[in-house]
Image (cartoon, rainbow, N blue to C red):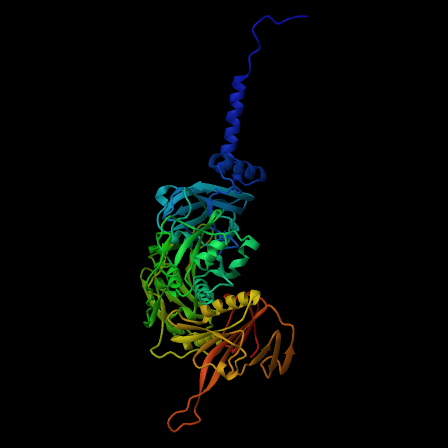
Length: 639
């Protein structure tokens, strides 16, 4: 047998090194987006594997990063950006008292870019550029993870600006620049935070609440937490949360594990439910933090502390930097002036850079305005830049889908004007759109689209007359409830019926009762006869006072109607999963000197929940007397 006695065969180390370098380059290119933009199926796989190896993400582990997504802030459909130049901004809440080792911005979704177009996406966080990517033509998915620098992490929120810019080829001429590129961010986009410890302050716990929250209310015990639950639910609904209720005793059964859980109950009840008081301090507090598993929850443990519910839903919450708070007194002050400025109600009054048009969508509910009044006029203050002499500047104003004003504006100056807001167009909740349009006479493919600064100034806003009359029907009730209202809740409700009445009651209070009004909560025995008379402006849940005649009779799940606008007579049975709102008057005998038979009318609202009704908050409730909410955003008018 022959043997090799010479030098042993050398191993190809140089080839191995080249292979490793090549693999590293491919991974780097996929992760950076330069190769296939990291958006094909293989690109996504490589990108996710690379992120996992580098950042150590483990979505199923207890120590996974704390995430705030578009879905958490109410953008469940994601974010859509089309054409260029186009711009979108979102505000994502962060923690301020809990130590964080790293914050990452996660952008994922789909892009659709014309083969002949050039486009790039720029991302700015709190004014600092953190990402800029040239998009690859075609339709692809993408997922980008960017570690944010500490210089961009300031303030209570992260303002994330996303700009899509680019151009079409000279050979393609089209007025609509959105033909070039469309980018969709799905609802999982947001931020990830690597917390070094559990959330340790009330303001951090509230800041991380998602848009959908559940309030757990005890069904048993000596203290009655139903009034506090309804107050808290109404206040959070006014702040834009979607609020559901649940029995505290049922949490273990349903194993509800979520950041959006708020606990109501005594300390003994919360401890019995498997929650542990967070923190080593021995201070008492009406609002405290409670921990179970990997989640820290806000807990309210004193049933009569309405001021605590007001505090944690107010602009004073940033003061709550510890794990407990117990204000000895908290009464908010509300301006009753004859103007509501846009800068005071959260309208974006910062400088906007536009090419051709910009719209401001301003939603307002009458219960959120001073005294529940209806605005009589609108003052607009818009500053325009200097520009080419062939620019025509227009401003259009729409109210609830009706064009109420359109006019020219002058370039290079402050344009201020006042226009009437017709009462007959306004509803309980209203959508106002102010659109600025800049049209240039010189056009065509040889004219490059430039962006110019435009600003809707904070002194714009709603104006009120000295004497304000309420609107008709349901939309007029906020003004009639401006001082005091009795909230009548039927006694003896249990289980799902009690929770449905709580959800309906909190949304009714949020929709119809101004923040300045005093609410008198009272249980009512619906079988009490004449003792059940209403004697002051009222809201009655699931019953009608004895001195009220309902336009639509309700008995169990049966509706009885007669001489309404839609039907002469009807008797409908087995009605379920609807909410019925009726603006009514209660007749009360109030004899006076020389007027022994004097009768007065007291305004009120009767609200029924048949089954589990849909939310009222997106329903177009107007100046009708009776509304039946039968689906999300759908109302049937019966009067």
